[in-house]
Length: 313
Ligand code: SF4
Image (spheres, rainbow, N blue to C red):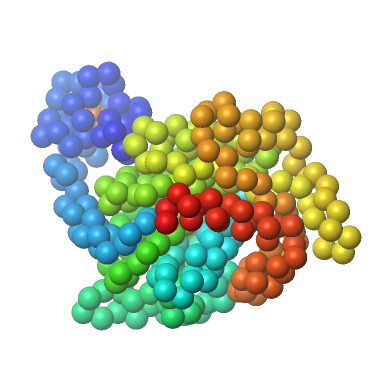
């Protein structure tokens, strides 16, 4: 369902899916959603206040979004979180609700970890004293489980996840969301939006096919009034680990993310070149920037993260 409470495929006079008339009004005759609307509970979602309360102890909530999968969203999420947690007085949480491919546990070296629960909810798994992680990956028995699930079951799991994790006081919660702008993705972002998201970071690669989806993501954020902190262009060139020379892999035929940001009046946070050692560090669950401080990709990450830090001190 669209976050506007009027699905895109609804007829012109749709009374709204939360209306008492939903599924029963004359406008609903012939609407493909009629059965679902007639039987769905009416009124605002009772879980939203519970999610809001959970999120009330978090100072900055950052959504990491991408139009497409495979653009480096989760690796950005992990590098940002490692970097924010460098200050040991800063409490950082990472919430991975990318049900399509929860890769965050691996990137923090937490594969095989189990969730522990107490009276106050599910406890995050801690990488360091001030960096906690919660991932859908911790509760999927098998990495392939999610693929066969249908929308409502995925949404139910994600909602439970948002309600039940006991973060305690956090300075930053970095949320890795599923890629795309599917209905399921939109409703997840809607749950979080109610909890007053500080801002979204949109990850893309330079080529036009990726940028097209990013424009949709930017439109969506504006429609639901989620502030956009900015756009990060990933895989912008390739750094040879030996000679440090850079070459282009995805040609920015339409000017890349920078031009797209100018066109859409969105902040451009910077470009990160692809360094094959990023994937290696992620596979090993190690912080790339600490492992390879001399890489041009490290410098790019640091510049971008400094801007984010300035925007959300
Ligand atoms: S069934 Fe009625 S309320 Fe539901 S989407 Fe269609 S028109 Fe809107």
